[in-house]
Image 1 (tube, helix red, strand yellow):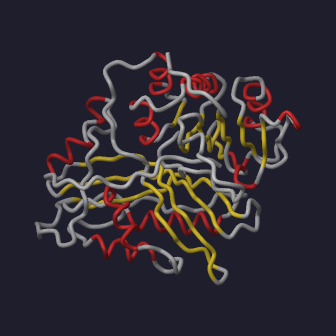
Image 2: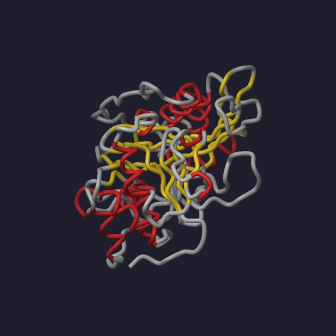
Length: 352
């Protein structure tokens, strides 16, 4: 529903070993990544010996039963899987062009896609991309007949360098699509989920609880938001409270969400952008989209027992689940049929 940072890449000339220092070390230190610089994919990388090993194939995205906007989500997922799956030394422009096929929107800016995709394209590595889940982030018009959509995909990106070192990170990547001649096509790569940030040695207790709770499946993009102290302490407290009742999976906190609300009803900065919201796409191992319409579901019970009684005052829910009527802390619409949006309309409280 609401919006995240729209980061363009930082174009620095770094060696491959420097890159490994930036994104590596997670297994040994608990860090997901470090450093803010990212490496562009050079147009004509130097030749090198073929890698001695291959990354294993990963499953392709398939819509779950009962999915909403499955055609738009499939197009977005196929684009991202193709964009992040390549061999060492592959030309960046060729990767982008392949990913945009077979049906880019006529207005797509290929140069802008290449620029924003730069952090995902590493010259001396082979890579695979797996879309874990593509969630809606905006629709125009705000209905089942939308012809413009934002999809925020949780993307697992794996790299294997030419000398055999393997790295991975999970980003929330924003893709924008438009219907042309009855078909969904890629119009824009909005952002790739922020820049890597090193975990600080000192963090507020609430932040540590969220980051270290195994019941919270959090993409690295969300971790970087917390490391950078961009997230409202009330959001973190709500996340921790929710985990006490059920394990859940986060799509986005701030980075990887559109900067502004995408619904056709005005020009408003998103509370995600302001660090005041979180989106949850699965509860107790089951996608939200498969729990909508079921009052016996874990999602509905948590909405009724936890969220409805909690401090959040901006809660987006699937259609038919607006339990507070004219109070309007809760709201339901088509864009929230696949997730909970949990946020705060005003203020920003530092985590403690």
